[in-house]
Image 1 (cartoon, helix red, strand yellow):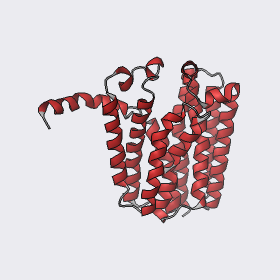
Image 2 (cartoon, helix red, strand yellow):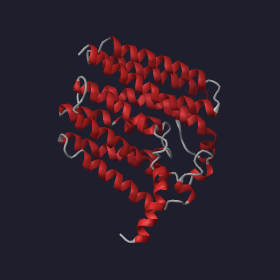
Image 3 (spheres, rainbow, N blue to C red):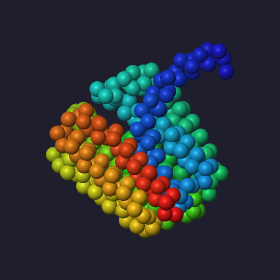
Image 4 (cartoon, rainbow, N blue to C red):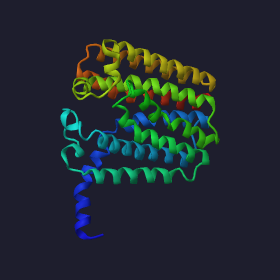
Length: 294
């Protein structure tokens, strides 16, 4: 590698990190929590350390790749949206070629990570990659692209079960369905922030589709998600600590209602970000429950 190439890479590195959204880890966390739920239930407690590390690192890499593809898909729109106008592709700080090479490299490393795991994980990684790469384009024609996001963000669930058990039981698909409704809830809060810009640009979102009923729809989605997780917990034989975590998560959802009911953009964004604590408290409940009631 020439000195000029090395210097360019060094100069571009901050732009690449911003393109991967590593300065905004909320997406990594929202992707990681359901994956960790699955690993804990599949392993009935702490999963093997090497599997845990593979999935944590894979989550970071795939979320980063998804962000790059998202900005590539939205490169002609982001410059017209206040919140996204300074993204590296929108400003020209990173070229489209650089973005595609970066996304491919991240996806390749993610793929290599799963090679030591059960072959079923390898096969499941293919639809996971397709979902991550295609989601950004669904905002052009899906009325509720947040549902597609929920599948993409939840596909670590069946992969986690496959890594631990070598199969994907029915409980994993119920967990995935719960994640779909959770994602609709939190990403509709996010979409409420961008709704005025999305309407101008013709981009679809649940906030637009639900219209004036979007707050009620968010709360219904929270209720369905937590109800499904309660059924999962019962099926997995979980005890009081897990259900206590779910009760606290329900309390957080009520708090989100107080934030979004006035439909003010900063408060809607605050509600979206707070979903990190929803995922965290459910995992904490699981971890404590398996520790105290193995």
